Length: 288
Ligand SMILES: [Zn+2]
Image 1 (tube, helix red, strand yellow):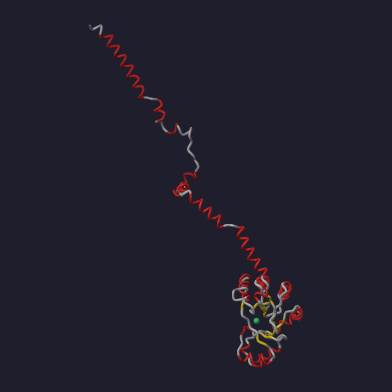
Image 2 (cartoon, protein in one colour):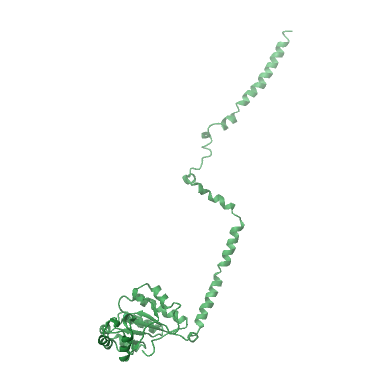
């Protein structure tokens, strides 16, 4: 009896060894072992991106992720709005029609003359101003100083020859209200010949006006001061001379003498062009 069970037990043991042997070997699954191995084994096959910028990005750099969150309709809407707002062809048409109206508007519609006046010359800038006036079929009034006429003796003649006029701005630009009647008379009699006078600084009073009238002169001030003498820049001079206060009969104060008048000369073509486009003509003051 002991012989029979022995091979049976051996067989059973053999089967057990086979079954459990495989099971034990399954625990040592080589695939699992490789997968669980250190990442260094995988790293060479799938190198991580080493771009420093990618790792240096601040937390906010994830912004591109937000883009898809925004409603997809929104960009389309704004694109439509932009297109409807920006219609170059329409704009051009509007501008065209506006400029056409200006071009077609005859000067008589405004019925206006604007009087440009230039003080404190003559000077080296006066010929340039006369050239601009001639090129724009305009004339102006030049209130000149006696002592400067002595330096530019030919200029007053050219001013008159080109249809503009010369007015009396005294001999050397004093404040007439601070002078005695005799001194006022002297300033006027040594100033340029003319029918009109402009008191320096616009400073006048009844005593000055009385003497001016006695000398057979007409006092002329201004209604628009461009402050060009302070050299504020060409654009500001243009703006002052063409602003909303300019109307038919306006007298605009500019300067061709007394310092650097290059800004005034540079502004003049645009001033005249702008006023002419509004229908005004630029003329010397009548009777001066
Ligand atoms: Zn002056």
